[in-house]
Structures are given as structure tokens and as C-alpha cells.
Image (cartoon, rainbow, N blue to C red; front, top):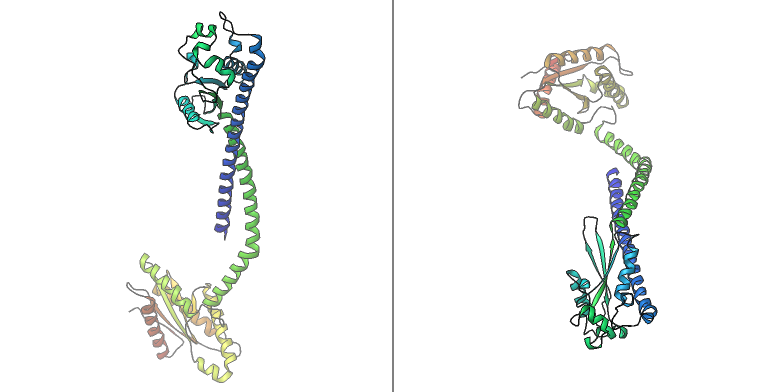
Length: 401
């Protein structure tokens, strides 16, 4: 029951902790992605502001190129200023064929732009890269030219003279409206967010272990008192009924065969001595015939109690027949067993039995030999017992062979 309860708690704890960990990590990554999207939206706002409010104030000139009027430059520059307060955050705009070679895409950036070109419905791609300072989440969004962009990036002959004078007429032209020519790339560190998620998870683990441990102890105590204890009590009662003789309180024949054989096996394996004493009340039939079976039952019960009291062992006396008993004495040699049986014989003879008067008993003693089983040992003890009865009863006879 305890194992089942503990296993249930472990499974519930592991599953709930795993689900929470996944949820916290996913939540952290969602927040990181949200930060990245916020940077991208800020850059788009700067681009829009540059197109609508800055460019009209700085009209194209044939001799002077105003970087402030270029949306990509304005976005990169503004976001670079923000990076001073957030050192690990980065924003760049790259293109397959940029006017400024510095903005040329490379590596996975090229793959992202080609993916946007292949699928016009694709609006976002993410990529995680490990770095010495921690994992970085890169989020790419397509740059698709509008009609305003074509004025500078359509045909080279239509581009401002100052642009051509600075960068030439080779790169950054031939763009069309809506075509994915580049990408906004936002990089955001994930280390801090994941670390916070893990700290939260570890706090949850600690609190859960405390709660689960307390709950386990409480439920264990409740179950022990309301379920386990009654079952154990009932089982103990049934074991007692199955192994004890209900009249005398001695162990029954079944218990003798099981426990006696176990003791024989153990002593044979270890080389320890073991003795078996067979006991029979003399002329017990006369007690039943003269005083009735109630007195006979009382004699059997008193006999067993007196033997148990004299032996000071509650587990060595077995009732194996009507008035026949056996005692299994591990770690006892022949002389000690005979002396013990003689003490019992004298004790039983000395004190009359209630309702039946003075009674005697005969004893047969045998010791364990190599190769013996409980059955062969009992047979030798029975032969000794019969010899004691044939010799006049009320005596101890040993049968070493």
C-alpha cells in the first residue's frame, strides 16, 4: 500500500513538474519572441516615419546623399542607439542584392530570404544559435518593397544621382513591389528568460516536494489507521487461526510440518544440532471415559499450558494428534533434550490436573542426523515414545539411531 501510494505521488509529481517546466520554458520563449517582434515593429515604425516625415524634408539631391532619408539606414541607426541600453539585443536589415554591400545577407539569412521569396504567405521565421554569451533567438521578417521604394531601387537610370554617385549602378536595383528582397533580422538573448523560468520551476519543485511529502505522510497515516491496520489485524487473526490449535493454544499439525521442516533444513545446512521430543499423555482415554470429554479437553488445554510455561518458549509445542504433542528444539543436542524432557515429566507428574487428578506423560527423544527430513526425525522420536510406553509409561526414552 505504501509503495503504491509513493509510486502514485512520484508519477503525479514527475508529470506535473514536466508539464510545468515545458509551460514555463514555452512562456519564456513566447516572451522572448514578443520582445523580438516589438523591436521589429519599432524598426518598421522608424522606416515609416522616415518615408513619410523625414524624406520630404530632405529631397534627393544630385550631389548630396542624405542617409537620414533612407529607411533602412534610419531603422538600423535608431535600433543601434537602443542597443546601448540592451547590449545583447541586435537589429539588422539585410538583402540579397543591397545597394550598400555592408547589408548583404549571408549564411542562414540567405536561406530565410529565399524561403520568403518562395512562399509569399510566409511572414516570419525563427532560428536559435548558440553563442559564448548564451543562446540567441533570431527572428526574421521579410522586407517587401513598396511603391515608394521603387523610386530608388527600380531601374538604375531612375535612381537619384547622389545614390548612383556613392554606390554605383550595379547593386540594389531591379526590385519589384511586394517581392521579398531582404529581411529584418532581430536577435534576442534567451538565457536570462530561460534562467528565470528554471528558477521558477525549481521553486515549484521545492514547494511541491514539501506539499507532496506532507500529503504523503498524512495520507499514509490515514490509510495505515483506516485500511492497513485493520487488514493486518485481520490477517494476523487468520494466520493465528490457520497455525494454532484452537483448543490448546499450541501450534497445529500444519504449522508443525511447515515450521518444523524449515528448522530441519536450516540446521542441516548450518550443521547445528536439533532435537525433536514426542510427548503423549498416559492413559488419556481413561480420562474421557471416566470424566467426560469436557474434562478431557480441559486436561489437554492445561497440559499444553504447563508444557509451554515450563519450556518458556511459545513456538516449540505442536499438537500433532489427539493427545500427542511434539516439541522441536533447535540448537539442542541429545543429552540436553533428554534432560529437558525429564524436567517436564517430573513437573507434569507432580501437580494434579483439575477434575482429572494426577496424570503422567511419556516422552520420546530423537536428534537430527545428516540426511534427515522432518518425517524421518519424527518417526525415530515416535519409536522412542512407543518404547517409553511399552516400558511402563511415565518415562523418557531416547532413540539416537
